[in-house]
Image 1 (cartoon, rainbow, N blue to C red):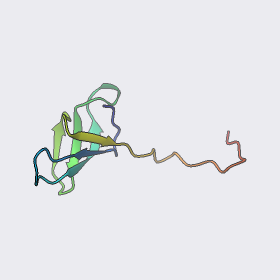
Image 2: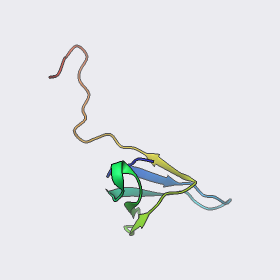
Image 3: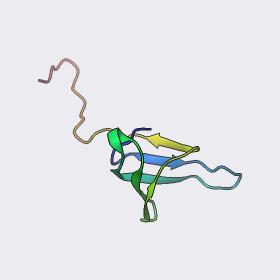
Length: 75
C-alpha cells in the first residue's frame, strides 16, 4: 500500500454489525508512501497505524492536478 497525505483509509467491519469507519492520512511516516501513517479519524482522534486486512486505500487526486481542455497542449 502506498498512500499520500490527504488519501482516505476505509476500514470495513470484520463482524456483522460493526460499522465501517474512515481515517484521513495526515502524514506518511514510511518510505515511498509505505506505512506507518499518521491518520485523523472523523471524530478528530489522531494516531499512527499500519493498515491491515479489511483496509482499503482511497487515493485523492493531487491538488495541482487539473484537467487539460481537449485540443490544448499545455507545456
